[in-house]
Length: 616
Image 1: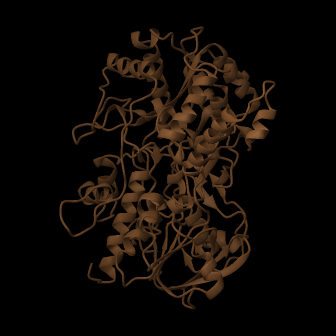
Image 2 (image 1 turned 180 degrees about the horizontal axis):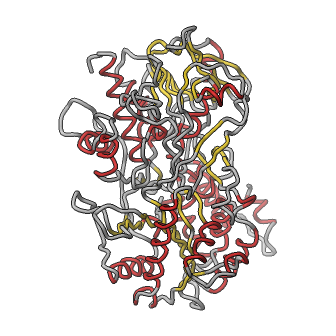
Image 3 (image 1 turned 90 degrees about the horizontal axis):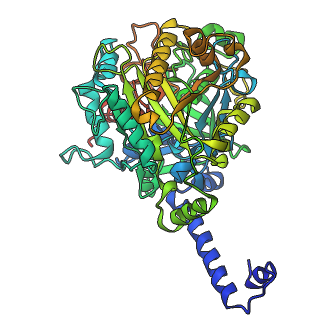
């Protein structure tokens, strides 16, 4: 943009000096925007070299550069004698990935897998075609580059439960050192310090923050600064994988930071399509992949193939390669390699979206000018509202039965100031809301602030299933979530809603004129308002994912018929394939799962070192 062009836009002309000043400012802002996510922030792409000279045989091929794969590849490449290749289906994260407030803006784009669940009679009815939208990250960092950035370990009961089910070495005391290893030194020189940066940020809406803490205190729920062994109950401003106003996914902090190692190669836009087994089906010799949706290539595996593509893509690749339930593969005419329950045990933290209006008819605290100030502040200083998660980082863990120190519900929050229609549009579009419900929420925002609350099942009992939709690798799989197939899940969510009703009636919430928004739903409005029958109907409409799909390549002892991988994460019946992502979780932790996924990768790296008896 030239100074002459700028001058022609105004009725009053400039002699040139001010045009030059404005042009300099614009160029500074554009440079600052480009600096949000420059190419040098990410690992170099080995694709051109591979196309030109072919691929060597690699000791380890890691499929997927997400939260787990980035950590695992980084750790394996610490041994200079091992050659490590990473295949990532996506490319570098976009600028929006770096900006904490813009997490919802990446959904329904090319940097996400845009999955839809199958139709269900029990849930997701408020959304287009009555199907839930399940986005997963398709870029360096994977879903860790598109998630809400919470870093929560879960609790002792979660992992002691894994061990009790026969997964030796996965109890709380076993996994705790691996959580610690990712983010800090473990106090000796055996392993390098972790690379993950964690920070807490003050909420940028102090009145709403104060309301939540005071309101929950009225109900006997403490504010917690650090969860301890004594109790996992309370409201807290959770740590985030965030540093200096920018996301710190493991794709950046582990993989990109160390990608200059000569023994570590990353190929982007490389979608793995098939694992190639030896004739006896006991070893994988190579993995086929499609590069840039154009070139067919193969990477040879010398030691191990490590699958870290996530809870949807990992089982999908195994099924396409002949590893899965025999009857399902027979129906699709896929030659059977191993008969394993791949795709079963699909677990998710289902939530129900509740809406609370605040400060009705009070003058709005934000304006379009504030938005411009926030954008400038972020571009120049990496600070301000765009650099935090606001009240979204305030999370509650509640035991609705009051029968112990462990939660059965997690509450997450997202607030919009009156008139923030752009933010609302991004939110409702991301979830695929039907137009009628979009309009109803927009009407609320005309006169009030809007607080969205997501009571989430911490320990869901219902499990679903993932199956192939055909043998073409481009076809998305069938995702059957089976939310509420176990009636206990519905009963727990009903108690969670009752808690929220009590909270809205506290003095702290009444001080901001809080009230529940009950959208018009003909089917539900036939019941007495806020009765159990009403809320069951409401849940059918406004239940959805919180993006924590897991369990589809279940870890269990090899004597367990539900086992896909053993406790050392080796694929049953196969000598040199390991799976090391959220898909191996036998039960989902009662927390956001990104921290546990990173822990799994750290532990898998140790298994590999031990099994190959390399001096580390």
